[in-house]
Amino acid sequence: MRAKKTRQATYLLGLAFLSNSSVAQHPFDAITQLITDSIEVIGQARQNAAFIIVRGDSIIYEHYWGTWNSNTYQPIASGSKLLSMALIARLFDEGYLSPQDVVQDYLPSFSGKPTMTLHQLMSHTSGLPGQSPFISDSTLTLGQAVDSIGLKTPMTAYAPGTAFQYGGVSMHVAGRMAEVATGMRWDSLFQQKIASPLNLQNTDYSGLGSTLNFRIAGGVGTTMRDFAQVLRMLLKYGKHGDMQVIDSLTVVMMQSDQTGGVPLVNTPYANDPLRRSFRYGYGVWIEERLNGHTTQLGSQGAFGFTPWIDRCRDIVCVLFVRRTLGAVQPTHTRLRALVEQIIPLKLERPIIALVGNQLRSSYSQGNQWYLDGEKLLGETNQYLSPIRSGIYSVRYVSEEGCEVFSNPFHYAVSLTEEPSKTGTLFIYPNPARTHVYVDGVDDFQVWTPTGVLVERSRPEEGQLSLAGWPTGLYFVLSGNRVGRFLKVE
Image (cartoon, rainbow, N blue to C red; front, side, top):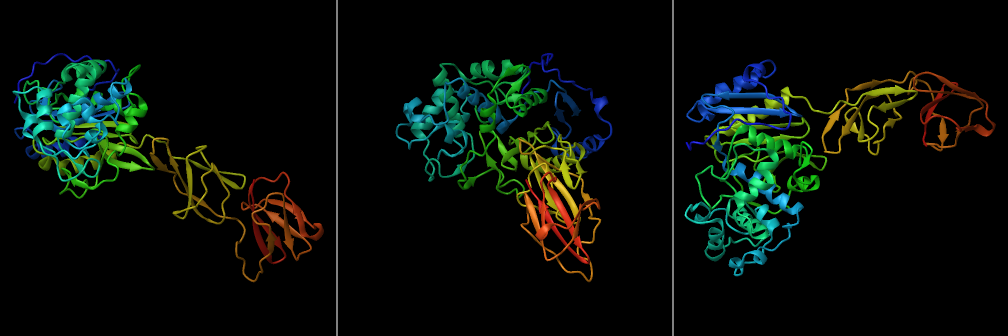
């Protein structure tokens, strides 16, 4: 293991860092037990591991196993991709680069290759292979390695923009484009644009050894707390304290599917049925999408390093390990389910109330009503006029795509909807706005579904004015006949 000088970390986010003894309590005992039971499989030297959960501005769980502690520095392999693409995303904001920039405009060594863009490099759709010996040659600089890729590494059989092929080569090229665009070396760029603003105390591109051929897609070494800082910035759409490190819309772009639906030709999850259909953004896997938004994302590494963001729970998590991805994945799957079981959604459940003869959601917008588990098409307003007895519920969807359901609301009309030995009144128009006609009767009564008498009427020609009536469902009784109509705006 590479020795790394440690420094006392000073975190400026106001996070409430808890001691191990303060967090190993219900309901987190199950998390501690799961990792303890798995440590011989997932632990470095079968004993070392760590796990952290940050919610909002506080660490709500932090635990270390074996000899590891908050200063432990480890290489994170492909977890590096998230940091590297965050850096290039910031260069987008500052105008140095654009996703549609053409590689050949920055790197003449690629003149003999098909035209490809920075977007394709960042999303692994450039047509370059996943691996090349030049990205791991520590005797080269980043510029020399990328020129060698341009001149000597052949393209795959897939043209740029036609296939997803995961690996390290395309991001290596993207990193060199950043150097050319800014006139700065990659490590200096990272320190200036990401590490310093986030106050990362122990994160660099020397995780696999000191080199000037900075391994953009796999060379980072970091501590668990440092990486949690980065995740938290992304969870907050690029904001760190009072600083907007990356523009919020740029963060959304990073965390959106950037593969364009092309075939997943090469993915590290090919043999993982839970993850093999994951799509990719810029440096992150899209692990869950709800209502058109990315709600969970991560950036696992070959050494088992497993970070993730869960927007709907307002948490970031880092499983800090050093084994192999295959060895860690079963424990990661169980851990993920346990975290979701323990930590509730950040959204409050909508509350349904009966107001007059209508149902009201506690949310003014973002609603979708259901009756007996079936979606009521078009019923997305705050108020709903119930059409019959049954179990009503409402789903609230936030601007981030997170969703939460109300508790079921049992609604029963107090009048018999289909009385025995009755006929049905013919009422029109239905729904009605200004008036209704009750055909073929001399007099009738109008009731709300909750049993409130609204009208006793002998209207001329059966016409009933609805001026001033609340919207909602009404029942009409005449003798032993019954009908109903819906008053709308």
